[in-house]
Length: 314
Ligand code: GLU
Image (cartoon, rainbow, N blue to C red; front, side):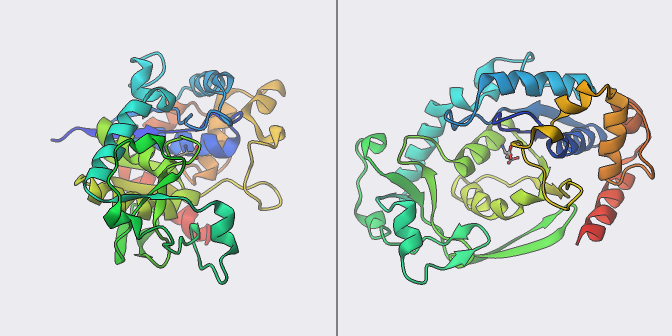
């Protein structure tokens, strides 16, 4: 049987809240139930927002909950799991995409795009109108990373679909629902879609379990899999945890952070029980360890429970 690999990939922009941890628990259970090697990858590309202190806190919080990993902090060299150390590799992939005429330099600012009259809007924000696309055929890249502009991936207009393990079949029209997207930012930061796909390909990731807020990001990512001639993984997009008012939790709201529950005396088993209830894996909020929860589930129950919770949230 081929090796299966799964991952949890938080951004260290603040302390993890119960919503982040609910996804982490889901990703860990999915990996363990489906015999996947489990990676913890730290997505700290945007150095202005990410801080090493939060990376350390993520590691502590996951350990405290009993969610262990096979590759990641403390298990292998940081060049495999810390995105800020992988820029040269991302750039080598960007270079290949440029050489095969999948990228072009773009001088439009975010404001230029928003200010265009009737700028179309899709599920991923403003759809880039293609102002700089004429450069696709004409640009010969010599010093690719020295232009003071961003690099955009040229999307082929086509209908894309995939079947999510929880949400079922999902479709988007490339070129209409989303347009040419940035893979390298003007401020010299590798963009999210590119880094995520490259890292998942290199690690051999077969299963991606994450929050449903990232569902629409699958489609630009599928374009990159196609351009890199790689097979996309299976996706699992799980319901997000909401606060009492029905709003998504935010890292800015410290009261939702795990630390605030620890400070009030919560035990790991209480938090796991709460998160498991949020995922629909237990009938009542109860106390149980991560291993006890894992041992109580089988793969089919896990999928069914997530689908039921999702259908209730719709
Ligand atoms: N780093 C992203 C986040 O913290 C997750 C990216 C992914 O799972 O693809 O929201």
